[in-house]
Image 1: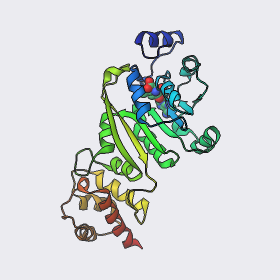
Image 2: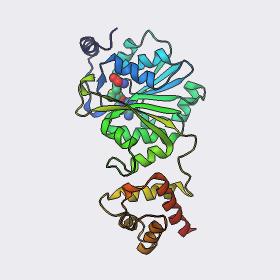
Image 3: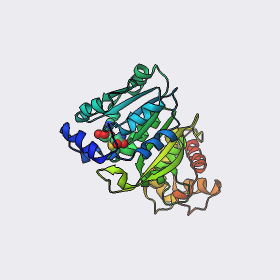
Amino acid sequence: MDLFSINSIKAILQRHGFHFSKSLGQNFLTERFVCEKIAELSEITKEDCVLEIGPGIGSLTSELAYCAKKVVAVEIDKSLLPVLNETLSSFDNIKVINSDIMKCDLPSLIKQEFDGNLPKVCANLPYYITTPIISHLIRSHLFTSITTMIQKEVALRICAKAGTSDYGAFTVFVQYFTEPEYLFTVDKECFIPQPKVQSAVVRLNMREKPLVCPKSEDMFFRVVKASFAQRRKQLANSLFSDFKNEITKEQITNILVSAGHKPTVRGEELTIEDFCTISDEIFSIYN
Ligand code: SAM
């Protein structure tokens, strides 16, 4: 069965009475080379277990199954199950689970399906929920890498450097836990239906330990969130907005200056190491 010809995709979907759901972010890949490239660049081998999120009609799933020991694909849309049953029938190393990835008990799933071995994630993520899914997967600490197609704009944010307009709180979060790599850009023409925006594939390699080691992770992420809450504001003002009932503006300015910054510095100019230094200084005021 050719999962990469528009006519055969339409015929399979019609036979099963399937209708695309915009709200579930259903844009299916129609180009074999894109699926092959995602599978290749996710560096999956026959030793690897893979968790796929949102198999759709199984185009990427089948490419992953050629490379991997086992693929477990979690699909929220029940109406795709008979389609997947047909398109993936020749594989004996794929299991499809009908569930919302955000509600899955990931530790039990990994224990049951992969004998406790940490899998790699590979996906063409639904765009309506990209950042919550990535955050959920990273926070679980259950995967060795996450290779995924996402909106190009989000990929640029994830891989951004300090001092650029794409750099923000999500950049810091992802780079704290992973080493992200921008792999390649994918045109709208590679999907049915075509999305409105361009896409890109990134690989997030989980770090063995976070990039920096703050005294308090909660304080580190509170400082990062506050620093980017109002991008146009100077950092001292953004931090003061969040901490005003706890520390004085003067204390904040002193911390910034003694860390080597101008009092007028903006959040987006700070590296992840700078955020760690500042959050440690704020933390030590309380302790
Ligand atoms: N992997 C397929 C491909 O590349 O052609 C389909 C990708 S499509 C962008 C996203 C898929 O994720 C759809 O099949 C959609 O039904 C599914 N999906 C959406 N939300 C989901 C969720 N919360 N949990 C699991 N699957 C979800």
